[in-house]
Length: 274
Ligand SMILES: Nc1ncnc2c1ncn2[C@@H]1O[C@H](COP(=O)(O)OP(=O)(O)OP(=O)(O)O)[C@@H](O)[C@H]1O
Ligand SMILES: [Mg+2]
Image 1 (tube, rainbow, N blue to C red):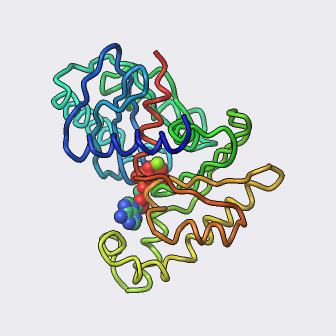
Image 2 (cartoon, rainbow, N blue to C red; image 1 turned 180 degrees about the vertical axis):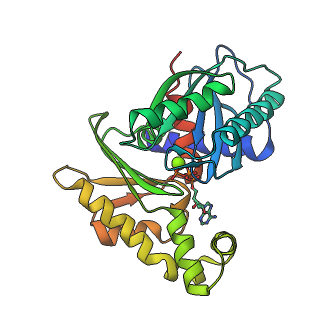
């Protein structure tokens, strides 16, 4: 799969979520559960990785791969599972599922993430790195995938289809909102709303230094690797000029797929082992 056909799958998945509908399918389903800092997403695909259904909810029960509210996280996954079951008309109890972690997280924290998904009566068959999950959807053989989510900038570098390096560092959409909050003397929550609803023309100049910081993180990680293209995903890269700043700072061609918020969750489902 190349990144263009990846885009088709992402668009299809986005439409399923938006319209709360399911595609017809045969065979076993694969589930992906993304426990993000800002959003929790369940993605369901068929054996051929065609998107079948999905559901999402904003939440702050996990922070950068660390579960800060176990019960809350478990309840949201259960609720989203119920929603997807309703849309599909199928019971997903003990369905096989994959989940994901930011690169470099400690084994104990990985276990807790996996336990949350388990507690919603899924059977966890794989725990994958977030940017690696995104790379699967984009069908990338070479280059870097950078996932800028709520809390962190994560990177996977691929060579000939193999992930040869992963890393993760603080700085995500949350930091953009903190900068906006400081600039306008408003609360973090107000800044989150402003960031998403005000015109990018007004927001972007203020949060641009955060994007430059993200690019400088990437610059440090790609040293010594042969990276010709950077693919950016995650909710913090939705700004139109995001790629341009990345290109200016890194000197590397930067590509953003459609619906960057949904790439990693879909890729987690792709990585569900049967
Ligand atoms: N329309 C938008 N404009 C600007 N920022 C947005 C928009 N939509 C979402 N975001 C930001 O994207 C971030 C969430 O992205 P994403 O869902 O990829 O993160 P996450 O997976 O929950 O977090 P992480 O991967 O860091 O644990 C939040 O900071 C949110 O404010
Ligand atoms: Mg994420």
